[in-house]
Length: 290
Ligand code: GLU
Image (cartoon, rainbow, N blue to C red; front, side, top):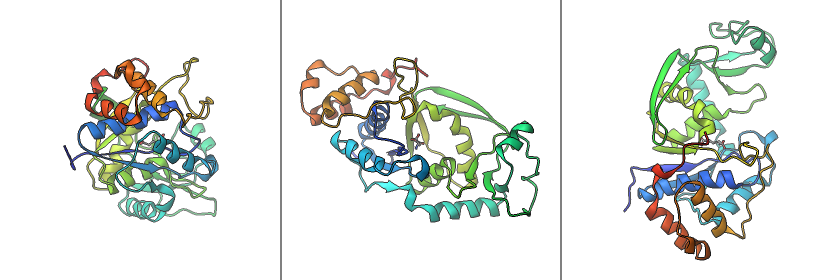
């Protein structure tokens, strides 16, 4: 079954090698796509060289390969997409959806999130202090349907929540780049960790401002360590052992509530992934750990 209507992706930020939590997210997005005959892509979100060890990208791609998670197109790198992001920034500035902001974090905190420099309404920015560019949100009670979590509601506050889209240091921000690339790649379905749920309402406004329809979202619970912390580089999650892909994927299926038969744990990588594809049930994902 081929379904060109479904285009999914896994979009890691290369802050370190793949760990078990990111494998679970990758596998969920892969199986969601494959079980519906859809296409699946990998996009490396390498926007911030200061937080990204140079070897991490190669390690992530090698790990996904070792686990049989092959994309339908060559891997995309956000570090090669600066022109597209700049084009989007210009477009948002021209249409009044973005503004230059030179407030420091301190100034904003001291003003409860209001901009002491009146950045939203100022047309010219004087002085040579570096400035960021922010997206101008509208006040909104945003409602949408998550494919797993059901009805969602988030309040978006103009000015107070306005996200940076181009940082003072010259780096494009995640909030902008993720939307620009999901539009450009025609992504219809985003499967990602629920630590990003709070970004979704703002992203919907950026989609609208760029004249595009948002995708469907499915947020899966993040995997916690024994201390109840999200597995991440900050909490020292160990890198996956790429020599044990079947063990890792078996455990990832269990973490996703998929209940794989025990004999698959000693079988081949292909038979495990094939079982995952044909038995995938998103409704079996446990919702408790958000
Ligand atoms: N790059 C983001 C991260 O690794 C994920 C982006 C997304 O899936 O929307 O947290």
